[in-house]
Image (cartoon, rainbow, N blue to C red; front, top):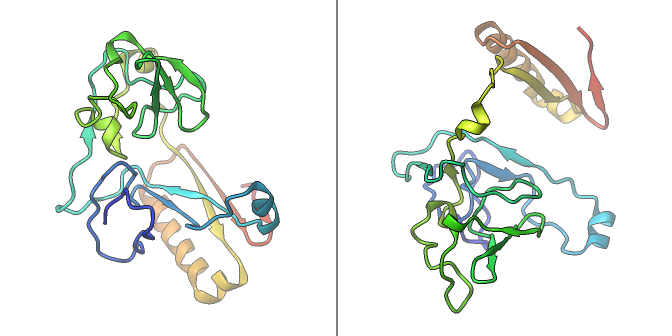
Length: 208
């Protein structure tokens, strides 16, 4: 499966497949709950199609897939949008001879650090795009720079479990299986805190 293909629906999570990262995140790491959505805001409001993205940053890969590349070239950390803090990625655009960048998420333009500037070709593409992994791959790993970890004491993990308790989920045995799995998980994992919410037509919260 080529991750750059936009005309092909990703394979099911139950299928066996190999992903070639061509600029979009592999569906092992990010998978949308819907693949067709209205293109106009008015249709979106009328259709009310729920949309979410399931993120699995540590998903297991097959041996046939390329390992995640670590990008650690700048002492100050990766270049990011100064507005929404998005990381540079293959869909950023570059303006004014690469002196300014434009975020593909919030469309904010920002000054590009001098050490990250380069020449642009006739299509306004960076000439170093194929040599910078963060600009040609959908998934890379950025180690946190010293400024991010200074005076930071990471706490033990907390967890929130959201369980579908709709009539269909109960009838299929899914809820019983999830509860059994949670008992095992909570007995073996050391969470500092955990919460459980359930949802069907509404969301239910619990106090322990």
